[in-house]
Length: 105
Image 1 (cartoon, rainbow, N blue to C red):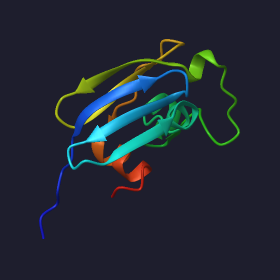
Image 2 (cartoon, rainbow, N blue to C red; image 1 turned 180 degrees about the vertical axis):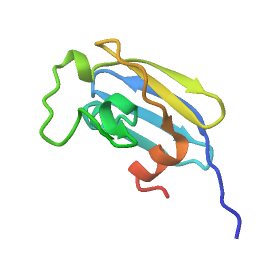
Image 3 (cartoon, one colour; image 1 turned 30 degrees about the vertical axis):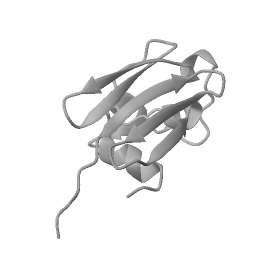
């Protein structure tokens, strides 16, 4: 059995609904709520690494600025990095992570 690796065909920030929309190469379209995306940030500061616990959990309160998506940049051939209104831009959201979050994997 082959592990299929899907990539975005396109993506866009939809500020009026505060969602990030990804159109996948298999025709699927997924939307990601900005606050949920920020809460799921996989960077070491937010999620932790090794023996270090991250600083973001279910009880974390974000400001509107912290959950405002301003830009999204591709990272190699495997992920995307969002830039948030407060300047945070260290999380790499892999395509596999995004597909799982949308229930597509």
